[in-house]
Image (cartoon, rainbow, N blue to C red; front, side):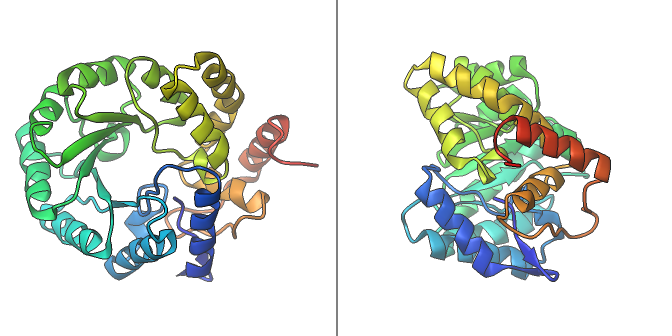
Length: 284
């Protein structure tokens, strides 16, 4: 989920509206305070409050998997324990960023969080943002920890994703971290996506993943090809700049970020508008 802002503050009323949108349109679970939610610019108090608001608004109708990762293990434990107490069904744990731990360090980091948290964890591998790649053999070791139940794979490497599926076995759910790769990953055993475009296309994203899970590859492929240019457009500039621009164009929220995120360049805004219009998402 994006984090909506109004005049520099978290817009809690809008956040609750967005939860209702997802509940109504078939989203399977909500992930507040991920990268798309601008978690690096939220204070710890805001971070915890966003998670609380989403859990309150969801009211048990849809699971909430709270983004509570950090490059500090102690901080990640604190945030995850809070999310568990608030009622989160699970936690998304990004690989520690900037400090570039070894594979053993990654293993110890996630294991410590899992042992302290008491809720299921999904590990998030996104080396383009963190500077470190969690290798399949490390994920296989982590798969032996009972509460580590999934991996969000955003390495962009389908070969590595396949290795992860083979290494971790059927007890670990592998999810795509890139909308463009949802269908290819599901074709080799992935089980879905933690999505950017679902912020404004929740029904279509859910339909694509459920079609693939049900073996309706024809329908899944049709949706994949229709949504592919839109998914690409979400990275005309750094995420979540384009998704928030899109949602603002659709009247879903105000186009507001926190520095160092900033408004989209006019040239890219026009490119984005053209893609959305061609896809039939933006009218007029």
